[in-house]
Image 1 (cartoon, rainbow, N blue to C red):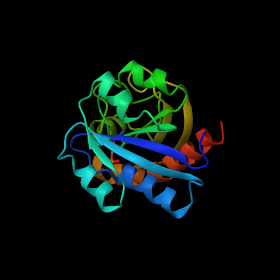
Image 2: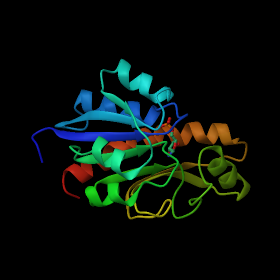
Image 3: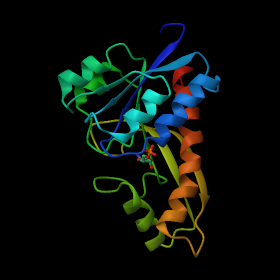
Length: 190
Ligand code: GRF
C-alpha cells in the first residue's frame, strides 16, 4: 500500500452523505492517519452527497452500478466504503479488493438486516420489536445483503418514547465514529 492510503466511497442516489462526510473529515483531521478519500462515486450525477464531497475538495464521479465501470472507478483505491449505497455490489468489485470493502448498517447485525432493511425501516423494526438496545455495525461486504464479518459495533439505548427519527439520530452519531474506527482497523491490517 502507498504511504497515504486511498479510500474510495460509494454513496447512494439520494443519500445525504453524512457518513461520507465524516470519513473525509476524519482523514483530513488525521483521525484516520495517513489516508485520504481519493474519490466519491455515485450512481447519478445529481446525488446530493457528490455536492458535499465536491465542497470538501474530493474528486467525484458518477457511474452506472455495473461491474466494469465500478472496478475502473475504484482501481487505485486501497479501501472501499459503502455509505448509503442500497444495492448489491457487483462481486467483481469485492474480488478486486479482498477484505477491504466495508459497509455500515444502522442496527446491531445480524438482527434487523437483509434485503429491504434500510433507513427508517430498520429503526421502525427495532422499536416494533421492543428492543432496549440498538446501534450500528461496520462489516465486510459480501455478495449477500448485510452479511460478512463485523469490524466494529457500537450500541446505544432505545427509550420507550423513541420514534424512528429520534433513534436514527442517536444511531447516526455512533455510525460516524464507528466507520472511522473500522477503516483504521483495516488499514492496520486487522
Ligand atoms: C446510514 O444510516 C447507513 O447506516 C446506511 O445508510 C445511511 C446513510 O446515511 N447504510 P448517510 O447518507 O451517510 O447520512
